[in-house]
Amino acid sequence: MTKLNIQAIRRDFPTLHQEIYGFPLAYLDNAATSQKPVQVIDAVADFYREDNANVHRGVHQLSQRATDSYEGARAKVCRFLNADSDEEIVFVRGATEAINLVAHSFVRPMLKAGDEVLISHIEHHANIVPWQMLCDQVGAKLVVIPMTESGELDLSGFDDLLTSKTKIMAVGQVSNALGTVNPVKMMTEKAHAKGIPVLIDGAQAVPHMPADVKDLDCDFYVFSGHKMFAPTGIGALYGKQALLDEMAPWQGGGDMILSVSFEKTQYNALPYKFEAGTPNISGAIGLGAAIDYMQSIGIEAIASYEHELLSYATERVNKLDGIRVIGTAEHKASVLSFVIEGVHPHDVGTIFDQQGVAIRAGHHCAQPVMQFFGIPATARASFAFYNTMEEVDALVDSISKVQELFA
Ligand code: 7TS
Image (cartoon, rainbow, N blue to C red):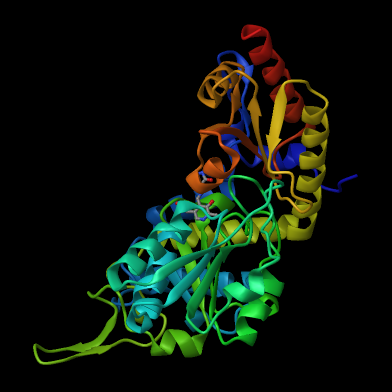
């Protein structure tokens, strides 16, 4: 069994301790966003109480302290991802903005009519729509790695999908709708063997497993802070330095320049070239605190405990009649999507809420996955390391309650 002291961990998360309709809150919507520990809340509040100033521009003390904290957070992200240098870490709003940045600055300049962008059937819309928009603009083709009934990628024809026309492969490490863990390292190796650059969407991976860009050898890696216990509005793009160096900025403004005249602007060095305007300083500091927090627990320990939670939940739900688990991949992380026969997932979500159980009901911004299974939506429970076996029991009780009401 786990070595984590879950009750002690839970004390760090103020939002978890409340009642909803008289029931203790069971927060099982972590794939949408996670709750925040006091260590993160305090880091953000302390910044505003003590150091608030803009970064990279002040000679005064507060600005120097703000800059040190902001850049300190970048160094933490760099170590967290096992990147080579801070210059490879660009602060962005989240995974969505990071993917759009790569689409605009890296892929768009080289994409021609007839070229291809390779994604998979189980991507979040954030890793579909930016590529589709780009392809539409130049007459390129969006090529999709198919999926299987268990919610895994069907890689039987994968080699043939990697062609001389493929300008990038962009795939998620973990599916948000199904929880499938994709073999992204092997896929990256195969893409690289044909000279194809790779972007990995780590939004659903970083809260649950070690993320090591050197081990994966990906060219770009993106994630959002808010799913890993940090504030909203902050995330990071990792890019190999040689690629980021070659890329033009996609937004212009303050901080991303060395000099400006009406004739010519000289861009700033990495990573500032990609951080136009005043950044989310407190968010970055909160992200640094969230990384410290996760590392103090231990990411391997988190992964192993969450695996126990998911196995227990899956086992209990599988014993029930009239319920279909959507996403039965061999390797999964923290997500249990399901449909209850004869009940719309939105009704499931509402009835769960009345029992204090917070889940997401919907298409999870992965409509192609729903189309594959021929369903409009699923109910999705998604776990974090502060969840308990008792909360899984509350989930199962709520399923029974729904079935009673609709019997
Ligand atoms: N990629 C994946 C795999 C995601 O799950 C999400 C958000 C994103 C990208 C976009 O992240 P953002 O922070 O830029 O919005 N996923 C979800 C979810 O499953 N429920 O709400 C948001």
